[in-house]
Length: 450
Image (tube, rainbow, N blue to C red; front, side, top):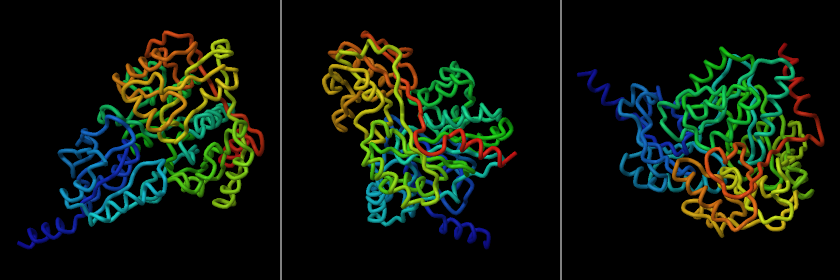
């Protein structure tokens, strides 16, 4: 009788939880904080930002013995109904690159329905590694993390350090199959059925010969990587903070969105935690905005080392652009999560003398048309979360009344879709202008650990 009463009492004390996410940070927070914790019962995930990821179930193979049926994933728009349906005690916010105002609106929705609202901090969800971790994160999506990550990796390679890149998650497909992914060759991208967004992040590293890990279960990933590398490079996503506790945190700021340093979550967290802040794109930003970013960074984090850098753009065939009417294609998350109207493709079109940059509103179809109009974009976002979006992207490009197409995605779209117009690829690299170089930062970091 006593045992039965004890079990009933424990059940009454369990707090029902909904995790708000976007197929990344939400799963990690669950795995690390909730999966083995009998004091909580996660009744649902919600999803936003990424199309086509609702209606799935976080599988029992990943959710563990406390969740034999897995955990359903609902649209975030249903939050009030879900709180009432599941008698939810706590709503846990677990995704990135949203305004502080956005976070508090969700908090207000949760609290108006009777639930508490929680943010899990680094102490609760960062994994400790036995190997040194260098993390590259950002204040906003599209700040130029990839160029900084590559510069870090190139410096480690030059020093003869054995390292592995671990990329922030992008698990938009079969979650069980994506639990732990190791990429060594370009062909591995097809083997794991990667989306365009995943290819854009992994391919530049693979082309340099660097091994990349990603997936869903980052504790398992970390233990595998520790047996393979002497140093781990965390390659961040959006403006999220690292899943692994960093020994060196490099954060990238974008003066094209000056003033955002203390207005977006968790970008401000990164700004305050950073050891090094790279103010990128100073070659295309207004000098006053560069100064504003520097002032804000120094106010938030007086001890951070500041580097000012240019993001230099190059094209493989300038004749496609010069004097021509062109359509520009950009990395999707940069435009949609990052609130930019254009990216490196638009910059390249201007730099190499396009006579006109064609508006995507004149040619976009399907979901791409919807996001172009809603966000008033000047370039086409390269959305490719599934086959339907790839076909819409292909139709959008081929509908355009233009002379050429400027492709500013890290992976060559021409491998996946047919573009019936002359096209050129854009590449971009970091060029430090003021302050120490990334290489000198890495050399100093490694020398102190030898």
